[in-house]
Length: 116
Image 1 (tube, rainbow, N blue to C red):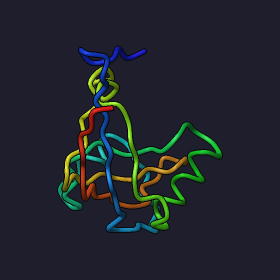
Image 2: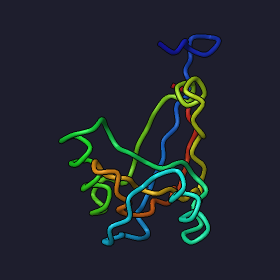
Image 3: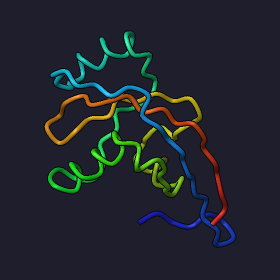
């Protein structure tokens, strides 16, 4: 559980995203492949996997790649507690599907920090 910020207010983050490249080839994601892809695709964010493995991840990934799901939100404290990089405008990340295949490149277009 993440504690609320001083004064009882939590800080949240919203991110508007778009897929700028849909990959239809068979590229299996692994740490070594990510280093190679980084220079080719100009990736500077962590790889994105949506939901847990299984049907939910397949559905969410399909929605992201189709351009239907274009936003997300979360608590800033959760990013910090998990040691995850906080999204920033212009960040480019690989979209990884349920089979650990690269399916696209996601660009964070707008990031807004909010008090909740």
